[in-house]
Length: 164
Image (cartoon, rainbow, N blue to C red; front, side, top):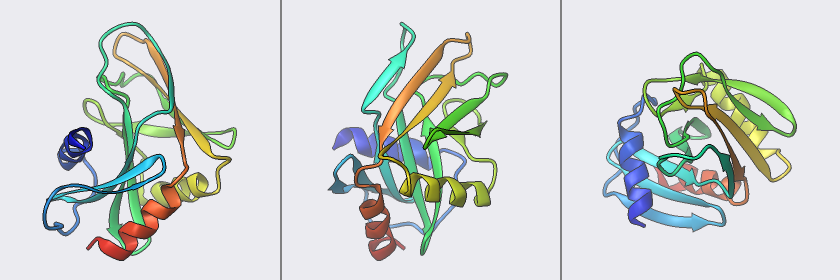
């Protein structure tokens, strides 16, 4: 549980859209491979990779997050657990189709627009059960993180019903 509170705090300082604060903070509920957590900045569905292929070296725990904005509107963000290379693209693969993500400051990566958020969330919800995030650190080392979508739909439904 402390791990997901940590991620929610990390996300609070990421460049995601601001939403109304939700009272309290911490883990709310588990949905298979996704957990819903809150912070003063809002509600988040968070998942860790089920499998990783990465370089040897120091790396924090990678995660993928979906933040509730309003009814059926969400933003996504991911952290590979290291400082991201700005000169290399981060790619998310869903259903064997690749999409580029915007490399933000530091550890965070997100889609370039709200419409890209919506498109990628719809792709995740219709995926074959998993998706892959392919990223590079500042030294050019590659990490490939495999995430499950099991429970994502129910986590989003829960946020629609309980987060404001």
